[in-house]
Image (cartoon, rainbow, N blue to C red; front, side, top):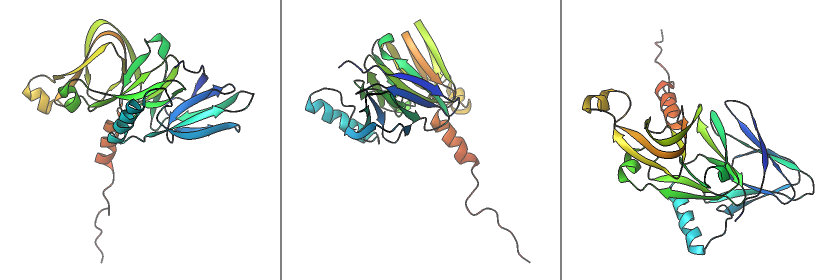
Length: 247
């Protein structure tokens, strides 16, 4: 299915909003709850999945994978039903950046961390991919399941902190687990021990590092949501406060 062509602009810096302009009968698909505001004249409807074509068993399998990973099996479809341009906007769920990706320019497919997908032009296939390597699944920071986006239109994913885009030409880098935001399908994703035993247990970088290699595009994030959540929990005030003696 050919994707709808949509125009967009990014608003803000650290808590970004992407504003998408829809012509008549154009549709954008988004994760449930991502919409921030929209013009009157845009109809929205919750549907099972991304609305892409496919056989019933394939769709049922994708719905099952979404349910297993805690994702909603429904996505919201926003359609301009008027004969004038209308705008709908989607907000990032936590501090970070929204990455606009022209799928036609990066080979029509990317893999990204679970929960990174924000919205995309109608016709983009949003599914899940199981990690092919057990080690990457258990220790790679992203779990067994990654989000797979396929299409030839615009897609928007959200990452934590600052985004770093790297173009690989038969290269290999080691990345802190969880800092991998997205990568093109021709990048190999695996894990490697974080040095010797002393470094693994006391170096502060965890037991394993993610290895990315090949030729393609990689997007890294400086602040994974899991790391931010851990720091908040560590420094949050304890319930009940301190005891105060009474005279």
